[in-house]
Length: 377
Image (cartoon, rainbow, N blue to C red; front, side):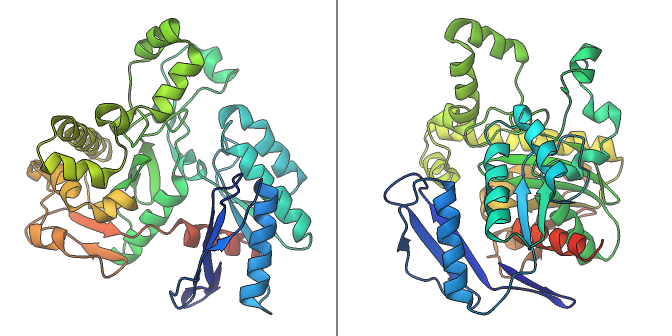
């Protein structure tokens, strides 16, 4: 929960309810001063009970503070939404129509909105879409070279995801540098994506029709010859193939782990599978860096963010290694320094391209978009 003001923002309360559907559910809360309260046992059997527990915690911890609006992350907005939208019945219907494109996420996103509307019927609800920031992609970037009816009738095109994160990184980098920029933003975590940003607008992104396309991720394959998936489906079935590509591939498939900390330790100890997973992960990012440099024509900054991008010194080193020809030169000392501010410059003094580490803050991005829309933006 965030309090926004003209001169900045303040986190009043942050929390996470884990293990929904299990008897061992736990609610963890962090207060505005950074103190972490003891975890509460919350045996929430479903998301409805989970939200009830969260609402009770809000009232208990914040007392008389009133809510102004609720912002919801919604994964898929299709082509219907190029920005956040105030929720009404038409917006809910549009999100529901997009469930075939996001079977795992949009139903849960809808449930959260519906529960909040019932609990706070007078409160503005805002949907912030992961796909919205990518609606600026030109047709040559979002169209696949497939039969036209697949695009026209089935809606198969590149949508892109992680848009809220990439939009925040773009705005934060431009505020830090004081001008519009040509950027490559790297949101690297268990899920990972890259964006080419020209003067504030996304012109290409690595994720496509689904979040499966693009970079190697913790458990997702990233780019793959579609014939390989068809071949596997013919042997083991569609469902097993889909499950394997989503949950058993990526670094998990290469070395049996999707935890980069574990992979780094194993690679340093000489584990060949971990070394391959690490090099494959970084190699794919370097490929996208080179491709997006060509897309943009000139580059002002590369932005690292996400759990891996912010914290993995060795991953940043490997990704930037050998990119002097693109003007990307990392300073080893700056790269190894602990993160003390939300933006840090990691480039060498002679680097024509800035290398920024920016702390991800999707919650703030959602709160800002919600406040902007409720205020009439």
